[in-house]
Length: 358
Ligand SMILES: *Cc1c(COP(=O)(O)O)cnc(C)c1O
Image (cartoon, rainbow, N blue to C red):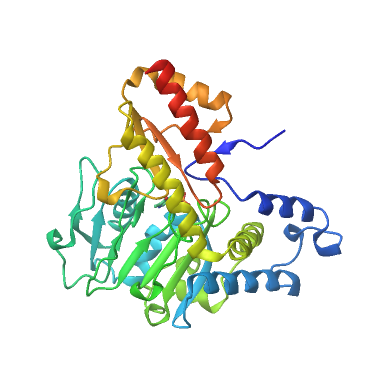
């Protein structure tokens, strides 16, 4: 059977060479007669995997020694709690920018631990990015948190906020899709299941001078200093997810790194946005200046056709195009592992659908 074109928002498409390598190594990893899942995380074989993954990750993003890189449990959402616990005193003031679904989740969780102030919001439409000059920044805030790419609404910052407080970014759906000046941030974190690997794993990049300030009640597994000290091995880490991320990182490097990922991702997104713009049948609700390069929501002129659209795409092996239930319509996620052929196939289908149903 051939592999379908998978436009899922997350867990999302993985590069085929990565899946093939994982498959080839599943029963007999490097002639050891067992799999990577069946060895001690503290043994030399797995330690080599863990270290290589960190080396490749640092190389791709050009991360300096001023930052620790952590491979943690619990996905991005666990970090929603870890962030205030590590960076703010109990009840301390923190700034959040709200631009959509994931910002709101982060805010909801942070409110349990800190005095959250909303510096800016794009509610209720959540379809644009409020300009920095309209933000109400609190100079007492321990940090400012924002979501550079809102995976569900498809709104993306194409700029980095210039603020005096430490900048914390949920980059779950954009990290590794293009080069990034890491040194502009205090903390960057991401769930792995978009561009980095498997669900359950989160990668955290944290400036080392911010470590060691977690409040006393912080669980060890959420305390970045503890996790940095133990090489992310305070307990048994998600070893298979870590290994698989290692394969994804090697794949990105072998394909030309983040400059090449950015070139491909721009081409793919431009193609789909241009097609949607030129059509009178499809429409994207997001303001032109802040359209996401990764997640492209679109609406059909007649919502009664949504069901047929989804049935037909499914039949043709164009999968997971249904928009998030909170937004409706369609969404195509075009992560690194989604090929330009996939985008071409989607556009060809959309053209045909418009001609026959529109
Ligand atoms: C997917 C996603 C999350 C949630 O990730 P989990 O690993 O499920 O916790 C958080 N933020 C953003 C921006 C996401 O895209």
